[in-house]
Image 1 (cartoon, rainbow, N blue to C red):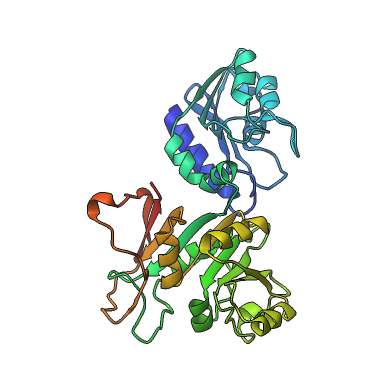
Image 2 (image 1 turned 135 degrees about the vertical axis):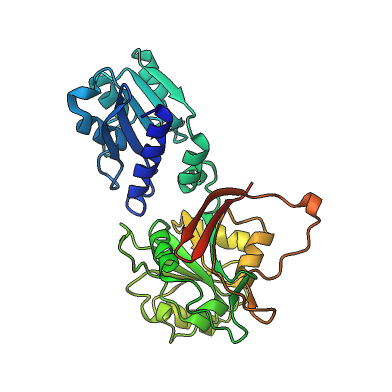
Length: 357
């Protein structure tokens, strides 16, 4: 196994912490003795063993003189766990290869500490892949003004999210729906627009095999606060935290009724103010699942960091509901190109993951 192959394996292992380790980063690690994999690990649970420590424990004595390949620079901070730099030095490791420098000022400095101890350290192998994997963590380190925003839309080939009658269940197949349940587990909150909330009456809960350590909050963007009390989101608000983001002119009676039902209400004059207020409540990452007007408004304002596009192999025609509405026209020469970070089949559907350039 080469170091590059080992890093690809470490990245795959890191995903096993999805939904269980936030706000910590996803981290995987592999121990190589020569070209042989002798230990591997990942950060599996918030507060639990770090990936490097788990991999070194699995390698045992075979870690002496070995190379540790990890997706993030080993931490040099004593928090819920001792610093990984100490475990690496105690194991007698010869070399460390990490994909990314740790941007957290509290935990950073591991590379320098290890080099000072005579250990060879290299940073940057498969860095782009590691950055895409830990996009939420990296965003929260550089921008605490708003949450990391991901937009997820399931559309027909011709870019429709519902038929002419507004029917959207089920546009995508079961594998795609299973993926969405997994995806929700890694976000602090799941959001829809008011029209979607009224039309679909969604629960916005995680119902897949992976149960998140902290269930995501439910958020409805409804400028007029028109979120009927009969909706499941409202009726279950005392069991699962639910937030309505309304405009400054929303009716007092409607707001009071929602608050009496256990729904939190935030008033905001703009989308950027709404996201800032959501971040102030502790929402670090937000998964937006529609509808078209909310998607268009967020994209137009440059507030979407990642787009998960599930495309299903059918056409709904010009009368179908457009996936994105209200985007202003942009000349081809002026538009920004997004970066593809993942592309794969989900049963008969196709997933395309795009990051803002």
